[in-house]
Length: 155
Image (cartoon, rainbow, N blue to C red; front, side):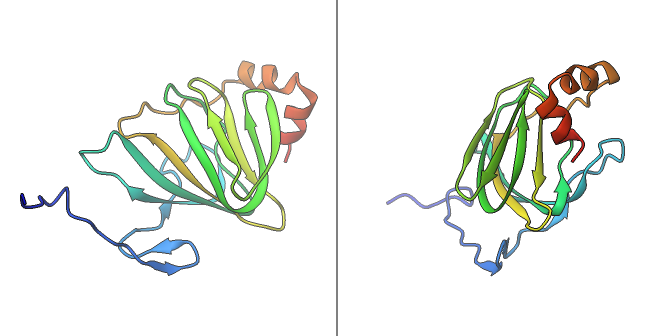
């Protein structure tokens, strides 16, 4: 049998607490102060040079939200914990545990946790990604032309 290389070796990261794992740092959601968000953390669960994708866990505290943004890369999202709402394009949906959300490239999107519950989700993306684009005033005006989206953006 051939020897395993370090990238092939199995590694177990045990759960530290409800949604934290050994050897996985909890980081601020973003470093860019120009990208508005509230009460969001991120953990990179899998990111290796021999994988084409990266699996991350995001947690939004009750009443918090991610940045409204879009970019070329696609997201695959699975809600693991809590409930909230998401905006994908001009569609607003209530989301909860084990719901799956696909975010196509160049589509405006944002996640908001319920006022009384956190929202935790896995996010699968390409390991090499483009940078997010924030909405310009005309993008916000176009989104706000949809009453349900305007209500979502108002929180």
